[in-house]
Image 1: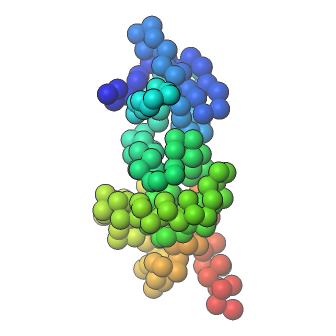
Image 2: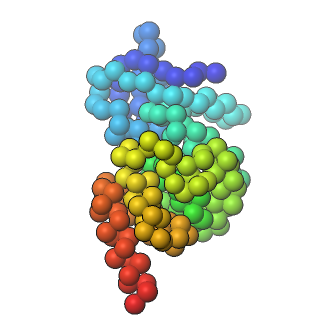
Length: 200
């Protein structure tokens, strides 16, 4: 088992990063999220990896952090979800946003990913909801752990909305659809606006 590869990034293309370690170039299938995080060719990088051995192929998958790798591995346990679909999902969604979508049961948001249909999205939610909530207490409680404030705008916005008296089941579907680059303040404002529209 190759836990990770660390070395110089010598080549990239869509869904692929090649890392040279000790004179050997390791071709790692990966996500757009990881490609954006590791920088340009020539950079020193570390990718956390999973080796997949099948009858027709041997592939190495690499990710910039353990959370993304863990999400990828969980996705592969879902019937009908292969590496290509898993990479597509994690190219569109960060691990945190993916986990929150699944935990909130929002399968419709997953259908926006190319190649993921309604049935596949529903299967992902059903199969992974318990796994994700058991492995991540913050998601299970829909609230950031003590001391986590300021580290994740989505969690900070959620905590603030819960303090304001909103129920997690009404705010989660709205929150997870907002732009990932939004600040906590923007997320709160946009969510309150959307909730206001729904009540009018």
